[in-house]
Amino acid sequence: MVPEASLCRVSVHADGVNVDLALPATVAVATLIPSIVDVLATAGSPGDRSGAVRYRLSRVGGPALAASKTLAQQHIRDGTALVLTRSAVELPPPRFDDAAEAVSRTLDGVAPSSTRQAARLTGALTAGWLATMGDVVLIRTVSINDARHSAGAAGVAGIVSCAALFATAVSHRVYGDRIAAMTLGLLATGFAAVAGLLAVPGGPAAPNMLLATMAAAVTSTLALRVTGCGAVTFTATACCAIVAAATALAGIVTAAPLHTLVLAPTVASLGLLEFSARLSVTLAGLSPRLGTDDAATPPSLDPDLLSAKAIRADEWLTTLVASWSVAAATGAAIEATSAGIPRTARIAFAAATAAVLLLRARAEVHLVRRVVLTVTGTAALTAGFVAAAAVAPGLPWILGAAALLAAAALCLGFVAPAVTWSPTARRGIDLLGYLALAAIVPLACWLGGLYGAVRGLSLP
Image 1: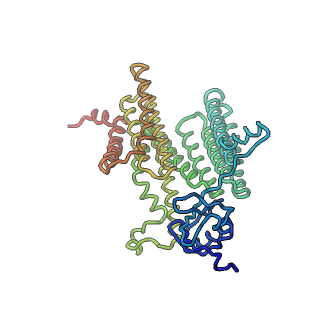
Image 2 (image 1 turned 90 degrees about the horizontal axis):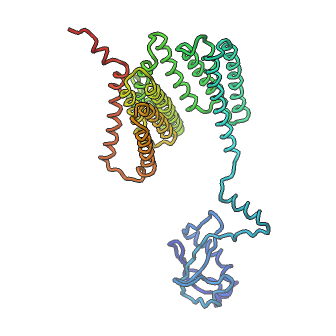
């Protein structure tokens, strides 16, 4: 029991909260501080529970009180107003007897260290790159120098694809490794496409592409079914393969040149990008079905069901945007590098496609979709730049155009995000995107020779 005569009645302030306390005047301040902190927490002070914190008492506008001394020793009287402050505890720097150990510890603190996740991602990217290069070399060798062994190469590629697909299921269902499962699934898809391409003799031609793309679509779908992960990646791959298969089938039926065949899927992909959000909502089941009793009522408001459908809609949107942007960029690249068509038209077509994709990336808030749109738009712009460089009057023009494009990319990446655009400016940029999209159709008609065909008609 502390005698009443030895109590010091003070007012303690901290974080906008003040309490009146009667503290023992003969007890060290360091002993009193934990109790004061608990009382302030009860009174509503938030405190700091995130880490080590040092609390100090001080007079208003004065230095901190010595923690080892009592209130009486520091001449704290009744009615004194005290302030409780806190500061993070700074650990003293370590001392080393060995200079090599000091250098190693310093570099460990400033340099990022290798992790298991980074090693797995590096291995996945390396495996994908080596497999892609091997497939390209195999296709080139078989189609040019050694077409007699195409059937054997196709059989080996099919066996490797089946083995990779089996390893995909094992890696995810047995070991729960998502990265390995997605990598093996993509490798299985690639080898299946190579097997389909080499299985048809006399290629590469439209029949080879049809079988290769259909094999890729089926394998990608199987990889999704056996793993249950990577829905966006495998579905987007299957969608791109189906678009390519439809183009190859049209080539078999019509015997039209490649640059004419890719016009329709490119224009359709750019147009469907504008409806991707509505399609994703419909595919996820968030919109009411027309012709039913639920058409006039909103979807279910069950929180769990609504969250699941929202996540599914976001995945569908990412899938549709990725597949259609890749299809559009591929078509623009084929048009820009094709011979026998007007150079001005193919350069303008690639530039318009890149403008549509990049302007849509500007308005996208989802990181993955923005990256996909930016990469595909840059690829289309690169194809247009390559086509323009072939007709440039001299090397200075090529260098100037490259520097201008690099400066524009830096401005869009560093300057534009920091600028607050007015609603009028934002609407103007959106209008530019719609104008670029509207220019796609007449440019496609020009590249397809429609204007020349109409001009050659003998109309009365």
